[in-house]
Image (cartoon, rainbow, N blue to C red):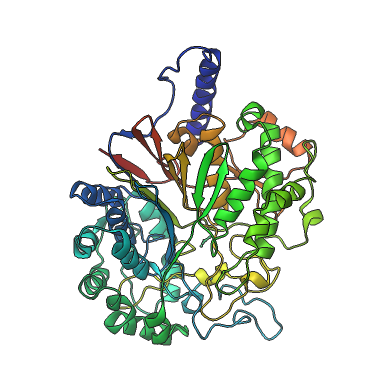
Length: 571
Ligand code: GLY
C-alpha cells in the first residue's frame, strides 16, 4: 500500500502542476488523475464486493437508495461479520432528490440494568477487558429496528425483497477474501474463549482465501426478521436466544430492553464550508459537531495555498483537532440524557476564541488545553457505505459492532455477533477507552442511554445540489478522515478517488501524538513537524472510505481498495 500511496501522491502533485499552469484556459480532463468508478445514474460503495453487488441489484430492480441501503446493511452482516451487523447499530444521514434531509439514530443503548461503575472493581479501578470482550460489553442492538424504520419511511420495494439476498448468501455461504480469512484466523482464540460452544467462525485449520463460510443459524434469524419484522429480532425466538446467551455469559440485556428498543429520527447537523452545505450526524455521535468545528477552524486559512500534507497544513489541522477532541471529551454525550451545548460548540464567536491560541510556528501541548490520560488506538473497525440512486436520492450510513467482531459473543442458535459498544461510554472519567478517547459526565453510563460515537456519515451540497456522500470506519479517526477527505476535494481539487487514496493523519488531543500513514507524509515534512514539537507515530492505515462525488452529471464512486476490499459499482 505504501508504494501506491507514493505513486498516487506523485500523480496528484503532477496533475496539480498541470492544472495550475493551465489555469487561464478551459479545464481539461487529466489522464494523469486517478478516478473511481464513473457512472451515469447510480453508485453503491461498500466495504465488500458482494454487499456492493447486492445494493446494485436492488437499484436495478427498481429500488431506491434507501431500499439498497437496507439490503446492503443485512448483506454486510453476512459477508463482512467483523463490522457489518444485525447485533450492533449505526447512523444514517440522507438527502432525498427533492432536497429533503434527515438522519436516523439506530445506535445501541445501555441495558436497563447498566450502571455508572459497572466496569470498576472494589477499588474503583477499571477491570481489564470487561467493557470490550464478552457479554457485559454489549449494548442493546439497534440495527434491525433502524433498517425497519428506514424502510418504513423511505423505502419503496417490499422489505422481504431487501433481506432475501442476505438470507441466500448466509445459506449458500460466503467465499472469504484474503483479508476476511486472515481476520477470522486472528480472532480464533477470542471466539473460543468467549463462546462455550463451537461457533461457525471456529476452525482447527486456518481459514484460507477462497474458503466458503456458511451461516445457517444467521440465515434462520434473518428469515424470522423477514417474516415478523422487528418482532423477529426483538421478541420471540431471537430475543430468547439473546437472553439465553446473556444468562450463559453473565450479560445484562433483558427481554424488556430488547422489546423497548427504538431508533430515533433526528435533525441532522447542518453547516457550511466555502459555499458547500455540510449535512452530518448530530449527537449521540460526536462526528458532526467535531467535523463542523474543524471546518470552521480551517475556513479562515488558505488551505489550498498551504498545500496538501505540507508542514503548515498538517500542523494547523493537528492543532485544530487537539482542541476539537478536547471539547468532545468534555461536552458530548447522548442528547436524550445530557444537555449537549451544541449551539455554543458551533458558535462562530466561541470557535474563533477556541482556536485563537493556535500558533502556526509551534505546537501547543495537549496538557495546556486540558489534562488527561494517554493510550494507544488498538482497533479501527466499523463500516461505512454510500449510495446514490438514479433519482438522485442519497444515503450515507456508518454502522458498527465497535471492535473487530464486537464483543466476540456469537449468539448461540442465532448466528450473529453482539457488539461491544459499551466501551464507547466513558467507563470512568479520564480513563481512555479502546480508541484512547477519554470522556466525562456527559458520556457516563446510564440505563437506556446511548454511548457517544465518532461515526460521521456526511452529505455535501454544492449550489443546492447533491455533491458528495462521504464516510468511513476508523473509531476516533473517523472524524479526521472525513475532515481531510472534504478538504482534499474542496481545497486540493482532488478527484474523489484521490481523496480516498492519499495518506491520512490524525490527532485526538490525547494521547498527544499525531498518527500518520507511513508513506502519506514525506521525510522532510515529517522532520519539520518533529522540529515544531509534534510527536509523530506511523500506523499502517487510517480509514477505509466509501464515497461518491457528483461531477457534471456524472457520479464518481470511490471505494478504498488499497486499505480494504472496498468496492464501488455503478451504472
Ligand atoms: N464504535 C465506534 C464509534 O461509534 O465511534
